[in-house]
Image 1: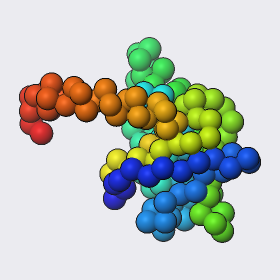
Image 2 (image 1 turned 180 degrees about the horizontal axis):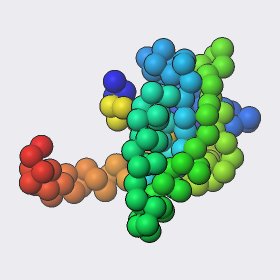
Image 3 (image 1 turned 90 degrees about the vertical axis):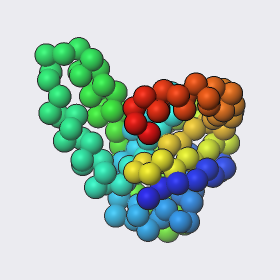
Image 4 (image 1 turned 90 degrees about the horizontal axis):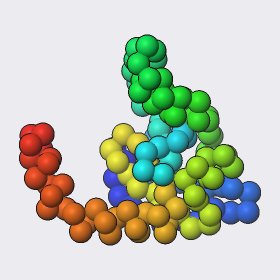
Length: 143
């Protein structure tokens, strides 16, 4: 299970250190792809395969299904941890997420989200300000 918020930075080669507590889960390989809200999603191979199967089963006759599948699958890249526990974030994904140097890795149970630090802080502040309304909506969903 991935939980927590971690501040890191990219090195000159576009590598990002994975928090130590997550490395064992990701040692068997991982997939990074475009996420939602201008971040990247990083999945273990197992979790990625579950998601990819669901995406492949979506009806290709529906434009939203095609668009979401393209967003997630066409943007995906296999990544391997090096001996220092780092992964390379491809340039096209860094551009998509606006990641420059400082970044935040957020654990969200079955995936990690990778954010540009400035964008994360902006998003987090807005979400915290709206937390009451968000909690009400979650209550409607049974959470």
